[in-house]
Image 1 (cartoon, rainbow, N blue to C red):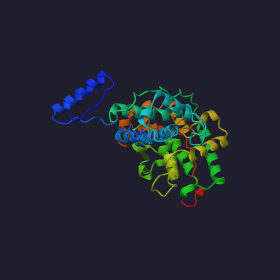
Image 2 (cartoon, rainbow, N blue to C red):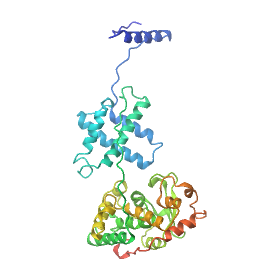
Image 3 (cartoon, rainbow, N blue to C red):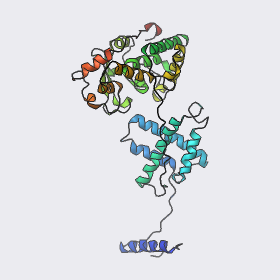
Image 4 (cartoon, one colour):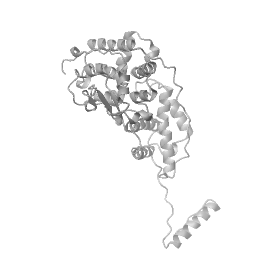
Length: 363
């Protein structure tokens, strides 16, 4: 072979002997193993996102990417340089959880809630487990998990339609006082988000991103695509309330997104939540209704209403876009047997919507 190497123990020597004999049997020279540089944590996280991009929804992939970026920030500060995959340990996860909970680490320089800490820790644990199973890197430590679980949801208090309409009035008052808006968006774009969710139960991301191409005012139907909503693989088609259709006809031009939100609002929450919180406070609505989720109130309000008027549970799942919509999810076209039942359910929502064309001068 022409090479020699010392071994610290007999078992290591035996393994080395087997490697040399195997190389000779294959007719090639034996080459000693050269130490490889440990894989960087950033490299592992980037490869994990690349692999998972084939089976994760886009918005989930964005959330995971943000969580892993936050972890990299912590790891760089901890390692004073470029962190390696070998630095992962249970102690690392515990210190990371503590760091996430401190003041000054959140988006608005505040402390993150426990629910947010869980959301930011989970992708790190998943990426670590994937790195060990993928066998791409030989120096991955055995994965550990903290076993954090989301806190139990607090008792939900649903708003009434009068309270919600009072909040909408508070938003209009805010818009009149502070009409300026960034990036050329209409001053009432946040009001449009709240108004759109009042009868459609659209989540914040869907309400901000949905486009006019999804609206059929002649058929009074709204096609919600799967790539902008949560937990759906094929999207859904829901009826448009007649009063909302009247309002939408005043919103033109019918190109691009419906609410014309600033681009920054499509990727992260901020202005719309802040505006709605102020509107809820201005309307004097009890804090238990809207605290923490000022727009999600519409979904709780509509679900409570539909249950109260006797709408079937599978129809409610379709209207709210819940994952696993059951048999109702397969019959929601305008020719389907359940479409009229969906239309009748939406028609039971009180029509307290008010058109406000005078607010916008540049439409």
